Length: 246
Ligand code: NAD
Ligand code: ZN
View 1: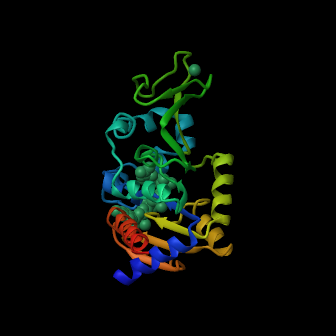
View 2: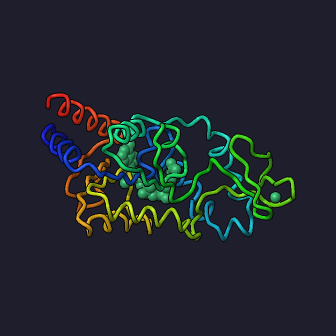
């Protein structure tokens, strides 16, 4: 295991141009359940129903009935050691950007500067009628909440069945095609088009380092098994030790 950390750290120091693709697993240690965690929240509330655009357009109160779980608690969720480790890697000029599928805003809260939120973020809510923006925690009450103009409010996140923001996905593809290493962290890598990004990276010569509690991307060049909040700080420490020794 120690050798594996050393190898990964050396590769990152030598190649730099590293990009991280993160999924729900990186926020698990911040207390936000992943979709895989079927025994928990998502066993009770099927995201394909509660977070689908078709259902939202027909009956937005379904989505908003869960508002206390997300929007109200938005400010209570805190980044964990994994988010901070990625911020450190950016400051060390090893990590170029974070592409995240998460909508929890925790990378930005941790201080990462270059973050591409390909599924949007619940930080921002907008009116479906006049497009007025509201920022958490200043969201009107109600299930669903309404804008001052009478329009229904929707979070600025990509629901199931919705298109991804074209600019974000274009940037994410560009970063994936031009990076030299991709850290694949806490994602089951099955939700498209995000799932195509590690393949794009690999096809263009990048090495893939997967960090997960169970393997999800068998073609990765390196796989470090463990919780993101344990593995990532250890990678940062190993990089620091190697660079200090040089
Ligand atoms: P997923 O729920 O399908 O998979 C989670 C992955 O994380 C699994 O591979 C699991 O083994 C791994 N994992 C769990 N705990 C971990 C830990 N502590 N450290 C490292 N790995 C861990 O998540 P996904 O691949 O991101 O896809 C689900 C979709 O749902 C995405 O669009 C995602 O953004 C969204 N989602 C987001 C949030 C959030 O914003 N925090 C939460 C749930 C789902
Ligand atoms: Zn409005």
